[in-house]
Image (cartoon, rainbow, N blue to C red; front, side, top):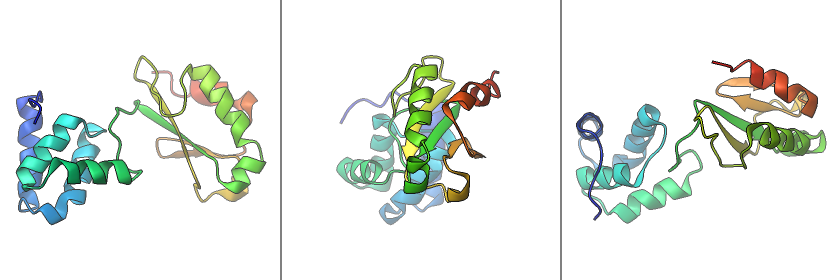
Length: 159
């Protein structure tokens, strides 16, 4: 097992989360959900500590993290962008919107901008098909997007 390089605060938080679920290996998904909610992603070190605290194999934790699309092992940007590529969005030009986002941000799908401001991903359906094509930035939905509107939408997030 690799040496855990987490801060004492992170270690304490993760141990406390595990304890709140009675260190029950059957609660691993709930533990991972809560830990990712706090830190944004689940590094190898975090997975190792969770496995140790829940007394389950690291391979089981990794299997869960890699299977469920909700979990991520890489840091997300401050403003995660998800472009819908479901059927309605796709036929109405979502791929062109995605290409423009990649161009404007200088990242590929799955990537995060070097400044940590944005991360870019795709998903299958937002459930707003009448507004296709749709993208989300954080929890905010942007509908009827066009490549021309991408710069304007990104400008809303100048911090």
